[in-house]
Length: 200
Image 1 (cartoon, rainbow, N blue to C red):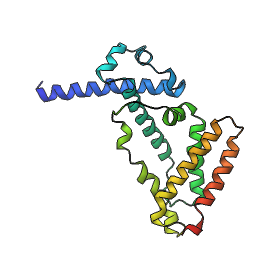
Image 2 (image 1 turned 180 degrees about the vertical axis):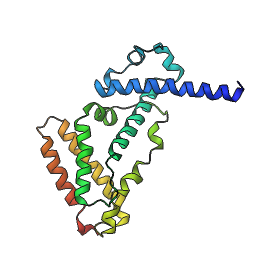
Image 3 (image 1 turned 30 degrees about the horizontal axis):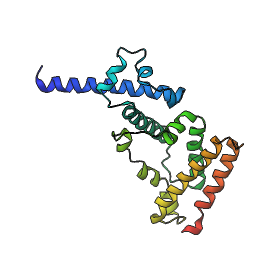
Image 4 (image 1 turned 45 degrees about the vertical axis):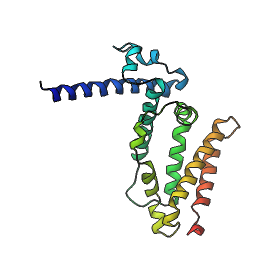
């Protein structure tokens, strides 16, 4: 075995071990919440001691940053399963918006981790390589072609929609009596307003 082959195998092993720790953290986050994640819990039941984690990550937050990126990649893949070939109309965007919001309503632990848990780390995340913006913007191509919104307004429209999602989710999770049906109703109303043809 030459030196280059040995180095490649060593790097592959390191990536495999890191992926194991990241996936173990993801499982705890999804099922129990990020507050239950610890290096001991992540290593529990594995062939590695908890101290081994520090051979691959500077600290727990660096590991959680990787878990965050992996979860976001999973969400993007989940949403991408229903991408249609035809241009999206307003009703299609409403359906996608409900799917996005419903995902977090059904996965409160993921929402809390992504949006309410602060990470003290400068470690790169797998999220860094995901082109979420352009993917999201392309959803509005059909409305641009139909003259409903202007091409130059797409980034602002997409951000207004996303921020609206998060606002509705915050209300839903704040125990103020907002139901899932009310979230859908307000989401549709918001979408109709933001995507009104008068923006053209």
